[in-house]
Image (cartoon, rainbow, N blue to C red):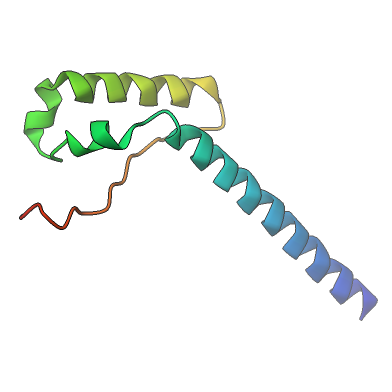
Length: 85
């Protein structure tokens, strides 16, 4: 029984540390992007010719290459209520 409790404690402790680390990484990465920049992107192919898109893409590439444990970096934006799709 003690082994089961110790295993559970270890699992919860490790999970909490990993979640804290992921949240810290996400906050650090998010600080490199401004909301006003993100609102200039449409999520369409037209973005690919935009200077804002190029700047953001370059920052994402630098972020990915700065940490060898990072293999993919994505941006997600909640839909804006005033934009019709």
